[in-house]
Every structure is written in C-alpha cells, then in structure tokens.
Image 1 (cartoon, helix red, strand yellow):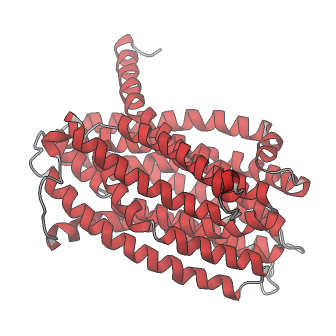
Image 2 (cartoon, one colour):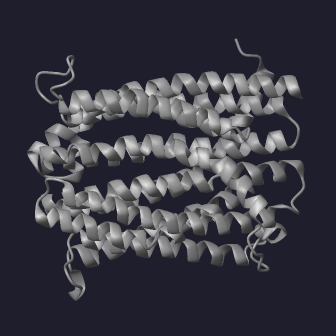
Length: 461
C-alpha cells in the first residue's frame, strides 16, 4: 500500500502536470480540429475533393510537424533558464529562435512545392492531381508564419503561460470552420472552391494564430519580464547554431514518424480514392487522439526542464515517470473507445459505405498501437527536457525507416521480389500493421533511454 505522503506527492505532481497540460490539450485539439474540419468538409464535397485534400494534407503534415520539431529547441532552453531563476537570457534566446524559424519556414515552403511535383508522376485523376498541387502551393505560403508561431508557442509554454495558446487556438478553430464553410461550399455568395477552400482556410488561420499571439503577449503582464520583441537584434550565428544543434534532431525525429504516415498516402494512391480516403480519415482521427499524450509530453518537457534548471534531478526523474504513467492510463481508455466505436467514428466523416468499412478496420489497428504511441511520445518529451535529442532521433529513424516502412511496403504493395510478401496486396491495412511494429519498437527504445538518461543525471549531480 502506498504511504499517505507518497500519495500526496503523486497527487500534487499529477495536479501540477495537468494544470499545465490541459490548456495545451485544448489548444492542440483545436489545432487538429482544423484538419478534421478540412477533411470532413472535403469529404462531404466529393470523394475526389477528399482524395486531393488528403494528398495535400499529407505534405502539409510532414513539413509542419517537422518544423514544430526543429523549432522546439526553444522549449527546453527557456525552461532551464526559468528553472535556474535567470530570466535575462530568455529574450535573446527567443529572438534568435525567431530568426531560425524564418529560415526554416522558407526552406519548408520550397520543399513543399518541390514535393508536390511528385503528383505529376502518380496515377491520379486530373482533378485530384490539380487540387493537390494547388493545395500545397497555397498552404506553403503559411509555413514561415507557422514556424515563427511555434517559437512563440514554445516560449509561452516554457514560462508556464499555456492558457493564451488555448484561447487563440479555439478562436482559430472557429475562423477555420467559417472560412471553410464560405469557400468549400460557396455559401453567402462566396465562390465554391471545393477542397481548395480548405487550403485558403489553413492560410487564414495560421496567420491569425501568429498575429493574435503577438497581440496577446504584448499586452499581458506575465510576458513583460522576458518580452523578446522590445528591440531589434540581428542574427547571432553561435546562438542559432546551438538552437539548430538541439532542434534539428527533434525535427528529424518528428519527420521520421510523420513521414511514415504521410508516405503511406502517396504509396497507396494507386489503389484508388477509397483506400486514400479511409487512410486519411483514420490518420486524422488518431492524430486527434494523439493530442492528449502529446500535450502531456509538452507539459512534462517544461516540468522536467525547469526542475533540472533548478538543480533537482531527483524531482525531474520522478516527474518524468509520473508523466509516462499518466500517458499510459489515457492510452488504455482511448484504445477501448476506438475499438468499440470504430464504425461510428468512420460515419462521422463520410457517408460512403466502402470508405466507412475500411476506415473501421484501420481504426481497430490504431487501437492496438495506442499504448505504444502514448508511451513513446511522453517518454521522448521527457528526454528532451534533459536536452537530449540525438539518441531519440536514432531510435525513431530505426523504428520507422528500418522496420516499419519496409514491412509496410511489403505487406501493402506485395512486390513480386519479396519472397515472404502476401499473395495479394493488403494496401492501407498492410501499412497500418507495420505501424504497430514501428511504434512498439520506438516505445521500448525510448523508455529504456529515459531510464538511462535520468539515472546518469543523478550520478553526475
């Protein structure tokens, strides 16, 4: 039986973690809710609109989440300064992180339009190809804005200011729904753009996020001691290099996982709109569920970073494992609900019976990997709180690119050269079976790494 003092300590830590995490969660759910709105509205426009938006969204997801990772270096660096009680370096850190973000965003925009050229070499209906290409071009305009927003997001989180992020995200969701309604279906006399309206809605909401957060920060008292935009500062290359050194492995880590999901949409395109639509719906919903452990992880990164900055590695280790346990508890609940309500979830997105049936099968596979997915994201965020980013990168690359994607390719496409390939290509289901393996390998590797990193910090303290 747990001692009353231990129960009190656990309760206190859970409460503190949740107070920091829940506004992040609401904000993240609103952010993913925008993608849900895009996919749902495109799906109700037509199956071709959904297919085109799915392809465009796959590139947007890969690059935007990679940018999130690269810019996340600001989170542990600011958290450590806050934990140490030295706030004087925070404005400089954030200003240089914004310079880095601008460069990253411009590179991502160029990469997006380059990647869109792949659509010209795929077996696609002309309408789907043109829609996907135009979707990528429009959303690429928002990438520098998005990268700068994520720096300010990380700065705000690391000084324990998460509620502004929640409020702005909810307002953005409302804006996204309104713009989608006006442009996808042509209501109130606006042009009916179909799936292309989703791209313009994305651009509008990203711009709103950045401007609204800047407006809030400039007026709210909690930011005054560390406000970074009170003066102009030229790029300081040593600081930018240190930000890249910490952030680039996180970006590669995010790319390894996200591209594994996004590339599936490209590889199964030859199987037709039904397979593509079912994959996108299942991915969209699992991304929504994933926001809970991700939000816990982001809050945990701040908690661990601040404790380490304050010179308390024992507390940091305790916080890390409490966070992992909380993520696992949620995963059990989400896996159960996903398995029971798979058909109902699919019907919420589309009325196409073939898409519903296939989506429900993919959601059952998603239910299986909930435990692994929650464990790996919370553990990796805790490790980043220790400013360790390269080893998690290696684990993710190994899990997804060495094991998951090759297995998915064999099961999904059944190439003739593979002696152990199935007799018939399993399409989306084959790739999702492989994702179960990849996430499990990542979860095992990252929990072992967290144990090692936490222990080594105790020894060196």
